[in-house]
Length: 102
Length: 376
Image (cartoon, rainbow over all chains, first blue to last red; front, side, top):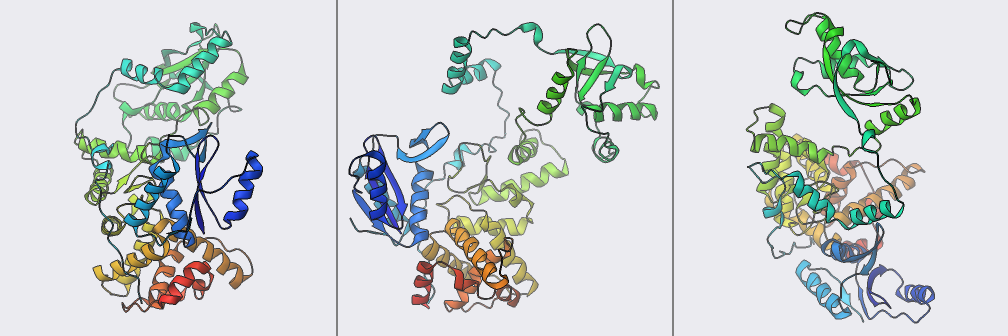
């Protein structure tokens, strides 16, 4: 399973996928411009899912909400590198067997 | 070989200072402060703007009125209210253990204009029980229930449709329900602030103290602390026996203090505790640490373990019985101890825990199986 960081046209996005190439194409098709995951991590499914949930739990106030729908776009001014540092810290702190592959 | 639990740096738990049940003194705020709070809420401001935009002006005369009304003047429309539940009157409202006249609630009515007729839309059980207690001569100095007055909140209208809507509103839709957490909070605060000696209140306070001792905090599932480390919204956990609740909270605090509590904790630890007790086997700290190692290293904690067991249980059921069997939370502890044995754990495990879900491990996700099969 993969975890990605995606600088979007409006906000910084993140998410998980079992097929990162396909997911990139989905974004490209949706927003009409080439989408490329800036950073990519790989690990066992439960750990990658957990990583995503940790980000959501710890930054709930910062997630972009459309009405009541909580998206996976950060609504603060974080750069990809800010999120990258945050993730690296969580991986070390929680001993998650997740590796950065991009 | 069993995976080894790795310590995670403990950070201060924010609930230690922000726990809503921590206070032992009552805090009183004025309505003015509440008003300021609501006026500062963005969505409230939007709502008021919308009222103005639509030129909505409310009529102050439509607000309900309150009056003391003779019980004899109350009417019940059977097509609006439910049938009388005599058992509810007897066992709940008037039970010797709980009945207290000070707790009688106001009756909600619709008044027929120009007549002293009050159609109850909510409170028929209260009014009927009160009338019956008076009729039975149980209220000092009162004999004729028809002449006894009760507090009534009413609006005047001839519209039965309106009365029907009012009944639906009072009994559900439109009313903020008391959540199980709020009910627990009331009991705990009754002891901590008011010194209540009520048995139920004391029991709730003891449970709360056990949780807090191990940095675990029951919280409202609609509140701001959902997902914070040590918190839980699964209020049924407070029905566990004190010793099992303590074992659960200690396990969480020792090994997963950095996560919110997943509901699987309560089922998993209580099933293990009960099975070990029945088999007269002692649960050691070493064994619990070994289990924590599996949960941490293979599942990144209980939340993902719980999800994996759910999925494995569904697939196992379909494979074993040919259809999707209903979820059985006993499988949580079973999967964990079966995995423990598969990895070479040496702690004696009560056999019933290992027997019930034979072959369920075959249905755990492949990437997890890869991890533990390599280790085994």
